[in-house]
Image (cartoon, rainbow, N blue to C red; front, side, top):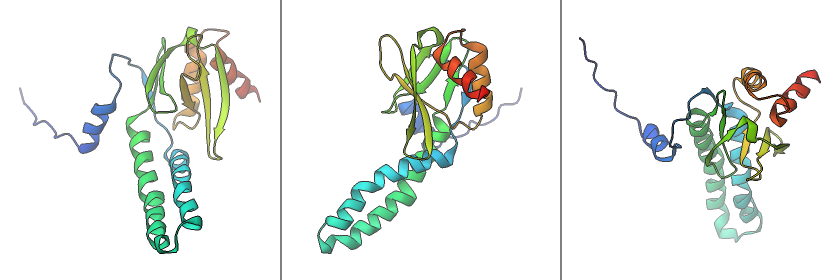
Length: 175
């Protein structure tokens, strides 16, 4: 039998293993579209620098302009690339795994979804905040997945009738 050498893990793989949720939640992974998520990361991070640039001391303005450009071009793009690649929404017949506002992975069974609230984070990104009887806004489900149509089809197939998320997607399809 042939043995192939193990590929060395990249630094991004090490980061993923460090922050990845533990446990055996397997299912279909749905990745975020990069551009909307990148914009949602860039704009909020730029506001503090912009305010300092306008209102801060004159001698800081050159450095603040440089830091602002670095944040916009580097930081937001890097964060969006990592998250869109390594932190998908996972769905299966039992439920889904997505992240809350702070980035923590949470698992929600289909039957536990009680309320959803569609929101728009800035202008570019749409989310649905999902609440259960025990936790309000347990996850923020992005509605800009690369395979959004397939995800919605799976939710309609797997979620029980009367499920708030399923009803949301069914009503959206009719409109």
